[in-house]
Structure formats: structure tokens, C-alpha cells
Image (cartoon, rainbow, N blue to C red; front, side, top):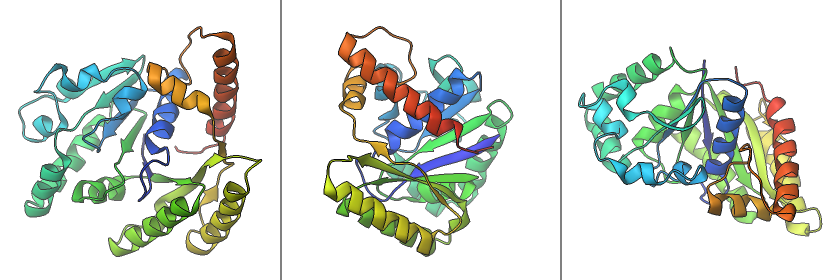
Length: 261
């Protein structure tokens, strides 16, 4: 079992999309997968077209499990075969509780340990803003994937992420992969950003592997609008179907290259 985070101190770089597709890929391979949303917007549910589950009940949030008002299975929400999500209610309040009551960290780690008995992979999805919950889950992670947008703001987010790890004494060696996102071969800025990212990654995270860049694809936004994952078996209009098939092929090749065990 592995605990895996996708992270970056910059919003809009595709963290939630990447972690959703990666989780669904493993689930489609027959692995039992759990995604804990540490972002109380719970955007990961929208990726799978299941945002109604966020508000369907008000007693099945992660906070209820931590407080002892729910059982382990009560907060698991199945969105695809072998794939379950956990939603959070108010991560600011949860982080404050973790800060003021340090024993609560042991509660989080105990919960993760118990879930680890049932799941092959547990993923954490974060907002760009940091919190005590973020620190606790990053520290618990076996592997971290840093997702970086290929523009000047994205590079700034990468640098801020490295500084965040240092400031909070989080082991930089946990960063196993750096995933550039938003590449466009006919645009100068993403290529220059990719070159710069590779230089900075070599300097600050020498043990991390910079993965092949994911191209900027309109099909990803189209799928998100419909609540369709890249690994869903659906029939789309010919143009979208071709683009989705190509995206699935590229992501499958990328994800098979990862060693997250």
C-alpha cells in the first residue's frame, strides 16, 4: 500500500485532474483505490460527475469520522468500480483543531493506517493554500508528485512548493516525480518554462524524476464538464472520441512508467 500526494503551491495547475485520472487508472487495473479530498471544495467529485454526493448527506464527511460520529465505511463514497472518495467539510477548522490538539494527528494517522489494510493506494488531493492538514498528510505520504504549470506563475509555484517543504521540515526526498502540465509545442513560453523547470528540479530536487510534459488539451475540459474521466468507457461524438482515446493512450503510457509501490 502506498500513500501518494499530488501537490503544488499554485492553483489551476491540474493537481485534481491528474490525481483523479491516476486513481481511476489504478482502479481500472483492479486495484482498490481511495482518494481523500483535503480541499473542502471537493472538486475531485466533479471530475467523476458525482458532485451531488458532496451535499447529498451532511453526516458523512471526514470530520465526522475523526470525531467518532461515523464509522470507517460511512464516509467512503464509491464513484467508480474499485474507486472511493472521502469528502471534507471545513479544512480550516480541521487544521485549527490539528494545531491546537496535537493528539488529533495521531487520530489522522490511525485512520490512514486502518484504511491501508483495505486499499492498495491512498491519494491525497490538496488546495493550493497550505494548512496544518496539508502538512500532516504530506508528512504521512510515501511519495509526492509535484504538478507544475508551464508558465512563469507555474514556475513560481514550484519554487514556493520547495520552500514550503523546507520551511515545514517535510522531507524533500518524498518528491518522487515532477509532472509538467500544459505543454504546447508550437508556443515558445511553455518550452522555455519546461527547460527552466528541468534546471530548477535538478538543483532543488535532484532525486526526483521530471516526467514527460502533458500537452494542453481541450478535451480534458470537455470531459470535466460532462463528469467523464479519461478512463471511462463511453461513446462520444467522433471528434471528442478520437481526442479522448488519444488522451487515454498518452496517460496510460505515462502512468505505467510510474513506480508508486
